[in-house]
Length: 165
Length: 104
Image (cartoon, rainbow over all chains, first blue to last red; front, side, top):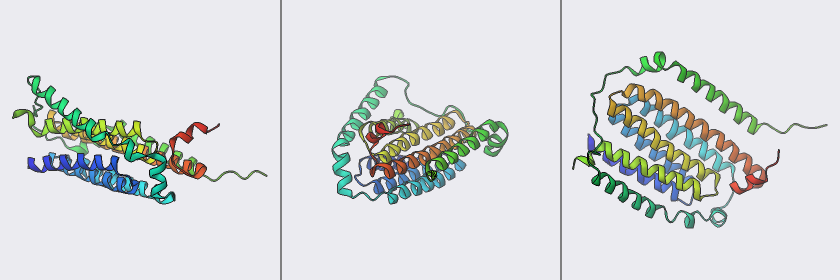
């Protein structure tokens, strides 16, 4: 089972880097959706089934649709985008930074003793629905307020300008 | 080696994803690319929350937090996308350097 987590982690990091370094925004959105799907797989294997379902449906589905809608509303050519933003040149150092950071993390972990993170407790067998609906009711209220605030913000951004007489 | 179990690997890869997301946010001028950087960093945070729940044996509680984080992530993406479209309608591109010219 652990091999699935290792493979998904590797693919998630690769897809995230490709989403950042890709010249086309459309490809970036697709790679981000794939990274979300890989995170959903990891969550499912670990045992966070409900979070995995919401991750895949909301982050991998809804956010991708929002991105692609935004991209389709703009009509800039690929050459113009590359010329204006120079993302290929500006993002060129990312792999080197990640390699150096990775080596630094691994070196620090090897040099320090007792770094290894292991699960110290068995899964308590909590019922997610019980916690979500009864224990964390304030979170639900916060989520509802956040969704309403987001809806109002989008309404304000997209409303037509008032016609002045 | 004991150090390379999957929990530690998740920690390392999460840190690398946060670095990649922050680098993307700092270096680009494209508004949608900035949202992608935010999303990449948020994915790492989501993974950390699940990892914390798994390590401590409270996976149910961590799922409740993760769902809250996902809702916030989606709302941030929606509002940023709305701002991006507004920027494109006004200036014809999605360059954040245009935001300095806004008035009122």
